[in-house]
Picture 1 (cartoon, rainbow, N blue to C red):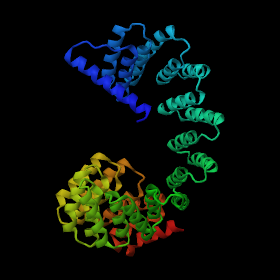
Picture 2: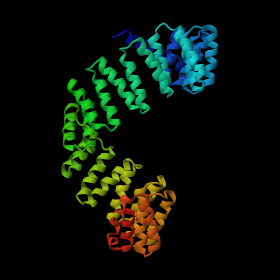
Picture 3: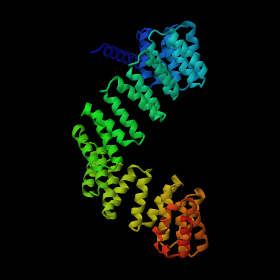
Picture 4: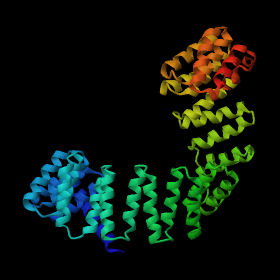
Length: 465
């Protein structure tokens, strides 16, 4: 057992002894350092109330032990009581004016109070007073990172590199800051420096792959994952993400093979089974796809994607009656998933369950009034029932929200022509052509007979020229 393990064991033992004393209302002896370590134990486990109780108990016994002031400051900081935290540090400074930990905490408190100039001064004092320079630079950088001040965090991680040019952790942290702020080119620069330091760093190659995939550069991401796998064929995360990139490039057969190897090396996994099902479905191998979706659902019945996938395979086979219960199960698991709700709404409509379908579209639009698909699908139900006024009214409501949505304009033109309100229909069609001419084919998806309407064809020809 390592020394740290002995220490943890000792702290846990002291915590148990302390809690027993509190429970039994007895008296036990603890020195100040032991009580401070018990308080830290609670702080690290996010139990600030218990930590504070220990500190107050300790101060009652050891009034001049400054460690308790530090711990109180930490607790107040975690609770968002920044002024109280600062007050404790001001007291501690009277006793320990040259303690770097004090100024580290003080700097963090000022940052949370949004007083950056004072925080900078505190961190400068930390660097003047500390013995372990690199460790403190990391501490300060992490504080800025936790406060989402990423440029400052990068600055301090770079100071680490000035002290230790081969410090890989600093490069990882810099790359992470750039990744969070979506400066992916800078992120790649950091990982490439790490590759220069260690060409066989699987973590660096893996993260290069992840960064390229976030940039949409899937071929480059695959190359990086391949380098990673060439170094370590057991790096399952690299193989899984390589498969995901192959899916993005529509290379479904290759992706399936990578997912298979992922399962061989890591064992069955519902998400991997779902991904394989998705690939097979895209290849129109619905029976095989369904098998994998069902395997995923069997492994974890709470994976909505698995149930939805089973439903899709039946739907693609034209078996809406069989699909709908699977769609309902997916929606039950993820009731806010708009994709699932849209597909369920369409299935309800196909089965003639009109009120159920309309209820779904109303639910979707209450949650998001800008959901174009819901407006269009709901209005089409009204159109298919020959309730032209209701179909038109729905799209007029939609246009109040998004007046420049050309899809709404093409569709409402359809409905108005069908109702015989040709003048208003032509005005909407002309506006749609001006906004987005290339989508004029949308007009004929609902009403192909409009290809024989001279007004419509002449107007399209005019805007084409």
